[in-house]
Image (cartoon, rainbow, N blue to C red):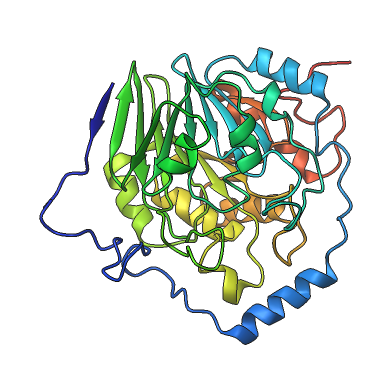
Length: 357
């Protein structure tokens, strides 16, 4: 195992280390200051949409389909568990990302609730070689899952600065926290902690006290980027130049309305395409949609907008993929997946991760 700190002038404090304490977004990112009136308006709109949405047929695979898809997908492949949780297989390794799997994204029973189940529960997860957690928001860092995770002795956890104690206090033995541009390598797997345009905090008093990040995941087979939560920004050109090109970008496409507020922390589907193009990614899988009601938009409109934006921006609609919850995408056959998003599932659409009954 090796750990490499970011290169550059080590005597100079990086810009994203706020001189007043905590962290801040890359220089030139959207302004994070919000007016109370805007936040009140958003809360009102969410209250009006508090009932669960109608979930399209086929959006969530059965447990048998999940298991069959994982077996058939092989290595390399990615399996969407819902929201930002993925099982990534590449180079003979298993990587688990942002495993929010329980019902409520909040402390206790308070907070937004899932309207569809996760593809797997915590005790059904495979043993991961590496767990990546992008930041400490409740819909990405699930304390219930972290407490119950059964492989705490063997899984290597990689988190941004400030989050190590969250895991060691809950029994994890192998935890490393990294700054942006730091890299960890072991046995053919390289993880680089990369910038993102977002925030952090689990309460009133810890806002931006821990770092947020995206991740580069590199093996001999694939170079994959995982966005965590991010808004758009000029930093992705730099990531693409330094760490790209990427074979696959896993990018958030949901939780983007009202735009005047959410543009500071979450990409819209159109922003997501701009991001993956800046990263020099060949293909992209949209995530962070169709799982939990966080914002005011129709929770199932993002995939179509994602494809339309990809076509309009010259990325190619066939390269902008979305999966069903529990679906596995074999990375050597990525172009066959995600086409069911034009409407309810039927036999003419892709069945990646789904075997005949």
